[in-house]
Image (cartoon, rainbow, N blue to C red; front, side, top):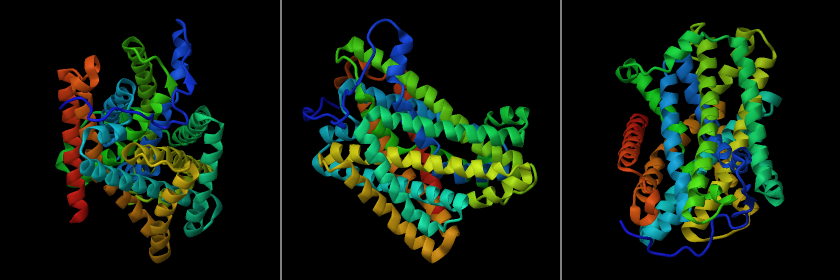
Amino acid sequence: MSKWKFERTNNSLPEVYSSISVTQGKNKWKKFLAFLGPGLMVAVGYMDPGNWATDIEGGARFGYTLLSVILISNIFAIFLQYLSLKLGIVTNRDLAQACKDHYSKPTAFILWILAEIAIAATDLAEVIGSAIAIHLLFGIPITIGIIITVIDVFILLLLQNRGFRYIEAFVGGLIFIISFCFVYNLLLAQPEIGAVLNGLIPKVDIIQNADMLYIGIGILGATVMPHNLYLHSSIVQTRAYGKDNISKKEAIKYATLDSTISLLLAFFINAAILILAAATFHKNELYEVTQIEDAYKMLEPLLGASLAPTFFAIALLAAGQNSTLTGTLSGQIVMEGFINLKIKPWARRLITRLIAIIPALIVSIWMGERGTDRLLIFSQVILSLQLSFAVIPLVLFTSDKDKMGEFANSKILTTFVWSIALIIISFNLYMLSGFIR
């Protein structure tokens, strides 16, 4: 590899680039708070509605066994997001800009199309998840709920006008709501602590049991999201850190701390979905509870609390709304980074949402609720297919000394992240072959 073919003349998300001051001085706590935020926004992608179906099915059918897959997936995510934030801080490029500045125009164009498809698939999952939550909470038909989700276009517009910190605060608030809802339900479910801890240890059964392996790969595919790699490399640049190497090292340190803590929180929520399913459905031999609506209906009689399903649906709605906000930013980053096409955020949001709404409406009208569940799974398959086209360039760029200088990945880290990339690609190909069959 070599240095960039093109010099970067414009910044990622220019309206908020370096808009958040980083506290000066020796107070490490204040510095950490200044960098806190991008990690939470990235963590949203690891608890979106696309994860719920696989986690619920995994817990209902196999108890706590697949907790180890969630843990391993989260470890993978921590390292990949570290590479993403490091790329943004060191090169002053997001992943989309880096691809444009390195590859030929035809290659960059193909990568852009694939990234746009992945973002549309992500938004499709959020639309369906939010519509299901609205249906469960208010009894509104899913078809109408899908149309209602357009409202979040205006929520994002309002937050963007106020500043990037407002978006981060809104996302953080919804994550708190999701966490509270699951803590409440887990206290009611009273999972066996010993069984939970044992589930974190990988089992040979996961590989030997074809059904368990397939769901495990589905969990992995739904956990590591391609759009998050574009997102993180951009929003980390909202911090006004210095451009010298010492300042970049400090920025990487605090951004990594922010990212790691946030992803550990995402691990708790992701694991909580599976634990709740295991402690309620699997424990009572209800192995066929694999749909979000079925889980909602069974929580009250099994846990003996009328608020249990309500909190479950509130958490789903919060997860869906959170994911739509970050998905929109990812779309803006990808479009501006690959083709330097700038359109107003509300227009970009509306276009992306309409692309997601149209297939969701057609399927919900034609096939009903079960059809939207299948469409939700199909969206995760599309994401799995696109993942390698984001991971491979990321690993290549951050391992290149000509591009990263002293910040290039060490040989040990390079070997490890390439192993992660190959595992993810192999597992996702396996899942795709199973879906095709």
